[in-house]
Length: 315
Image (cartoon, rainbow, N blue to C red; front, side):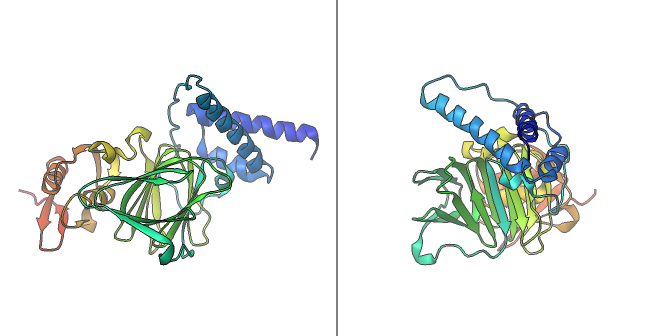
């Protein structure tokens, strides 16, 4: 490769990074550019890393923080697993691999579980994790995290020498520095990104790319999943006593509600297509379910071991 060709690639990388920063990017075109040549991924990585290092230096030296730019608006509200995998090499990438990767042994793990409270956990030298109510994760001394169930908000710093791995059942998250939530409920995976880039892959499939302002929900057993949009400032809103939704699938809402009730909340398949927009106040479990039935045409059927949301009968 000539010096002129390398300069052209770096100029393109700067251009793409600028578009992403201001929220004016065609994500399909970006993925195609990254996949177009082997030199594109490392070029973008260098530009993004340089930008992050400059921002960190400014903060460390007491310079005013740059004004936060709007999050990018994804061009597609639904994408499948087999989209190209180029973004995995970018800075601020998280690789979520739904597979049977080997994690730390149980002897190395310290387990943290919550009941009716939240808890903040320090990951030495890497950041913090906020664990929601009725959630459980385990942390090893070498930086591995295993999340068993519930929801957690990760705020992790970039460390090339010590990436964080998060394992939950059949999926693994490798973090390079970003803010995102991971929720696991009854074999379903939910990921929402506030800042950074995330790749989600199932077994050996090519990853699907998530950027700030995107969410993913998928089935661990089959690997099927879909991507939608989410307002970055609502990611992990449960930390402030609210559940904020914007066209969010009812299955994801039910997963959230299950953390605040004494019984798991399920959704009848016939109404799984319903989506919720609005704000729910986290007061107590029964009240949350009542808020759902007041907003959507559904009713709650309670039994000894579960709460099932079904379509409301016509009158």
